[in-house]
Image (tube, rainbow, N blue to C red; front, side):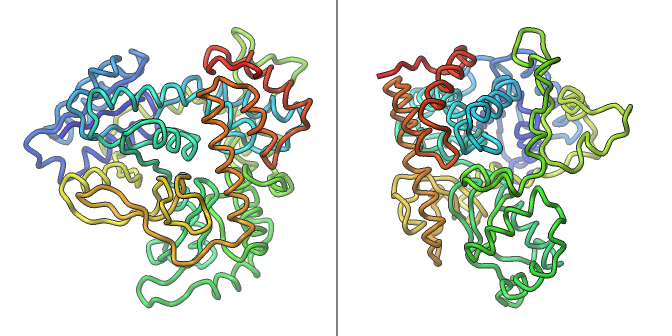
Length: 458
């Protein structure tokens, strides 16, 4: 077996996949396993290679490691291709957040939903399609296993514009189960669920006790009603409001679910802290300037520090992550390696969340739209498990809007059209006015011209 890890410089997903490989008893017993590490930055791929080499040696793992900056070389004879790519992540994400809001958008995050996410999509579409089209030439039967965001938009593009088998993975549903467990005061491993929708905008239609089969929603309803309304505000407040509004608890949390609705900002205390900077003293996107620090929520991170305490930077975090310590090697709880094992060894498993074309799994949503729900994996591949309970009309309506946006963004990319991008932005619940949207598109296309496809008004 050969696994190609594209974007091997990724701190979280690349190292998580390597940890899972080295801890897999099935992969360790294989006659021959090759893991090809590929990144466009030589320094990044070298860093991951040295870490992985030390780890494989420490665990006496027989797998063969290779490294390259050449995509085609990495893909030769690959059976599975794990992809986690992003260039100058926080530099561009901070623009995705601030510029649309400057023009009147009420978006709260801009990673996977809202106007900011559309530029995020268009930046990543080119590289992602390049990987998929190169796979068509080099390893057409391999699975494309994606972690790159915006998950649903990118997976849909690959499914529609290439012949490659593709699945998008995300741990958001598992984060939702952890929240249910907190309310119910029982272990997350004891909770069975049916859930799905759109990536970062899913809902649990059923929750039950795995041992007894008891419906846990009545207990959850009572517990949620008694719970402190301010507890874990940034993660839970919008979710609890959605639960009371729609009747089902959503996942993964405010700053993701809130990307797809117009009313999220009232439930997100950390909103003013996202990539916060002082425009008088700081010019974050000019050469030599520091990118604003990313603050995920109003609790934790640098907010609990003393006035003169050091704050951990992204560079510090990466350095710590790449300092090998055998005692800290643990399973990532991501699904890529379990999927690879199930397909290769033809062993049936169910995973909590997969992003793939709907094909009837979720009623009320387009057949070709990429949705997220549970999936069955075996030697035949991956197939979404149909949801038994239909999502409420209001939720389906919200997701259907995003389905139209997916199509318009693909058209904007293929046709190189700012006009199609404008249509997508104006459809979004967090859209600015027509005049502001036009000006925003022009400014973002100027700021991100090195990364965006060339777009014109048509």
